[in-house]
Length: 152
Image (tube, rainbow, N blue to C red; front, side):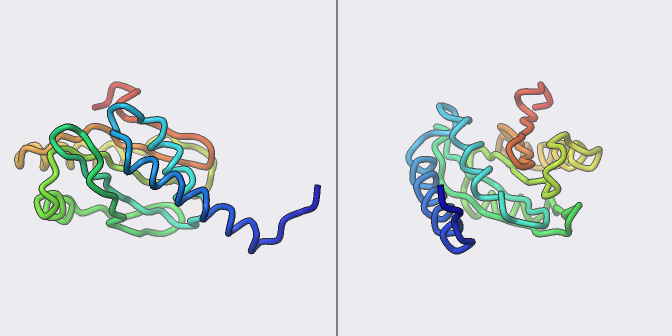
């Protein structure tokens, strides 16, 4: 089998990303969390710095949209609860799913800061009647779900 060039690999990844994005937008998060994880793994795979994003959900937990809110360095990203709350209110979201990646690809385990900011965001959004359904950390092919681990 011939080795693909960087440009060919990039085209294939972009096509796969577009297919997954259409599939995720069409599906409901509650029905297909695995689809969201697959989408995030494709979306975040080639990013060499931390990003923090939000998936906005309607009352029935249908996906309203995705937004990358914060970019960081190779090992951290600052997340501001005020900005998250403003965007949730602007989008009129009833629930959200957070995501970020650990670009090293080593571990998807949350840091103390990951746990702290998730709890702060949950508390802030509770005041505006928006539920935090999950927070995914993606690291290469690994992922961590706060919901699956009983943290949400």
